[in-house]
Each structure stands twice: as C-alpha cells, then as structure tokens.
Length: 115
Image (cartoon, rainbow, N blue to C red; front, side, top):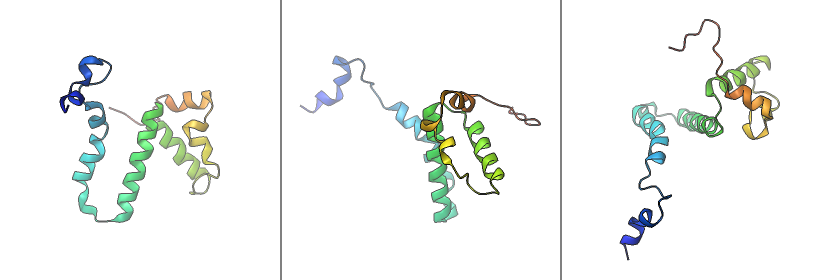
C-alpha cells in the first residue's frame, strides 16, 4: 500500500514527519550556489565545496569555526605560509579532550568586534 510509507510516523512517533533539519542544513550551500554561480571557475567551485565540507565538519563536532580557522591559518603562517607539516592537530577525531575544548571555545581577538 502506498500510504504506509507516508503514515509511518503515526505508529512510530520517533520518526520525524518532515525533513526540515536536512533542508535547513543544506540551505547555506544551496543559496550560495544560487548567488555565486557567475564565477565560472572550477577552482573556485572546488574551494567552495572544500570550505562547505570543512565548516560542516566543524559544526558536526561542535567546534567554533572561527577559532579553528584562526588556529589553522596561524599554523600556516608559522610554517612559512605553507600548510602545517602535521595536519592531525586540526582533525577533530585526532584531538585530545583539551584541544577539543579549546576549539569549542569562542575567543574574541584584540581589536575585533563581533557585533
């Protein structure tokens, strides 16, 4: 019966009636794709896809994206403007509890007003 799939949430209340969470999660990239489609550059499309992936990973792990990116860019600067030798320090699944706590914290830098 075709209706059984449409009414599964009636007998199973833990099943969501809609997929709004998934739709909200992809809203940013979809709106961005619509707004930025004029670049015509494969490199910029790859960069956008990479950044969406990185930011989604930060969100999934509950990390503060600004804190993580600042730490990563500082490590690049300290390494002569090259990616860090050991990327494991920036992979959430490789971090110890102390490092995860640091990356989850919101740091306000001097001279920066977040409002």
